[in-house]
Each structure stands twice: as C-alpha cells, then as structure tokens.
Image (cartoon, rainbow, N blue to C red; front, side, top):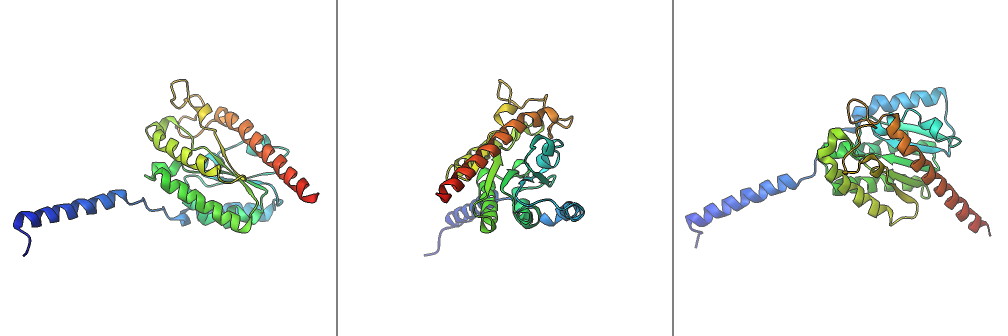
Length: 242
C-alpha cells in the first residue's frame, strides 16, 4: 500500500532536513595552496643566493611566523630558518612541506598555523586531522625529527573565535602526548589577561598580528622547548652509543 499523503509530506520534509544537516556538517574546503606560489618562490630565490645549512630549526606556518622579525636573532646560537606564509592554513603547510621544510633536513620544526583555519570556518577536528597529515608527511622523510606546535593565539580581532581556537589547541595538545617527539608549546595562555581575554598591548594596530612585545612572550618559551628537545636527543644518542 502506498504511503498516505501526510506520510509522503513527512518523508519529503525529513529528507530535506537530513540533506540540510549534511550540508551544515560538511567540512569547509581547503583554499587552493597554489595562491602562495610567489611567496614560496621568493624563499627559493633567497636560498639560491644564500644557501642555508642543513640541520637547523625550521619555523613553518602562517603570518605569525613570517612576521617574527627578530626570530633569527632571538634563537641564536641555533640556526633558525623562517619559512612562514602569511594567511596560510595547515593544509597549505602540507602541500608546501617539500619545498619549505623537508628540503632543509631540519633537526627540529616549530609550527604555527590554525588561526586562519578557524577564521575560515574549520573546526578542531579538521585542524587536528590536517596537523596529523603534516606530521605524517614530514615523518615519512624525517622519521626522528622533533615537531613543536605553537598554540593557536588569541587575538582581539578574532576574540569571538577564541573558543573554537581553544578547542583546537586542546585537541592538538592531547595528540602531541601520544608521541615523545611532538610537543605543544602553550604560547596562548600568556597572551590572555586576568579576565581570560586577549591582551591588546601585545598586538599591532590591526589587533591580529603581534608586536615585538608579543613575540617577547614567545621567544623564551620556544627557546626552552627547543633546548629540552636537543638535550633529549643527545641523551638518546648517548644511550645508543653504549
């Protein structure tokens, strides 16, 4: 017996609602990574003119890396290579890893991205999955490299997005606990005031990018983490030699 008219309308309504739910739940598409070709080629041109040594620390990620003006000086005596792409997502870092990370055969990698992902509508699970894909790609060629994830930062301009950013930070921090050569550097907490809101005194006028005062909070945390990883690496090498 065919369904009654009210039943047919109910089935149609449920079908429409389910379809809408699937559309809402769908993950945002990754933006095209090719849009950063010019920035990548600029790094390669610089490398051709002044070839960097292998075995340093590569800083990869978005504009928070690219605009870190005193990075090389702050990390001395370590060899720090700044290879940030302004406006990039974690997915962009996967795409460009061969040319911005792997070619340098780094001893350690400091990674910052996720800020623009959240602004683009991505949620914690998608950002975590993308970071896992980045780790897998890097580890395929460099199985023992250390990778340090810098917490997605709270900023006044994107304060409304901070809960989603904090969710992504928690997910990635938990993931780094599963691998002794992955670390999560909590650079976000010092950027919050006593009320838990983003500090305005450590940002440029756009209230999105950090000033030198903001990077001054990051520098010692990053140096300390890199130093601990190097000590652990030396200890492992020493045990291996016995």
